[in-house]
Image (tube, rainbow, N blue to C red; front, top):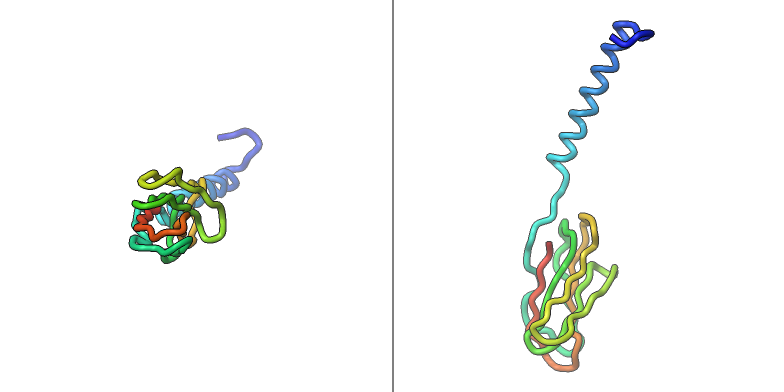
Length: 117
């Protein structure tokens, strides 16, 4: 027992510490986690864009088969690929609940593929 603390106070502190530990474990187990999923796969016209359904994600990636693409999360951030078949990746840095976005970065039609992580 710590000197200067009564037994009842020590018990209260032990109960509080136990409750805090239980809360931390519960938050860790039930926090929304991001998982990989596809969005907006298909043809986009000249400079067209597509938004996927909102979901928990850490970032987005994507590529176009005919031209470069740009990817982002809602209107937050934008990263573009260097050309056809090259992957553009935008990492938000933490789990968020937003809609992923992919844009055709050219005047011609583009078969695009988007993924979240």
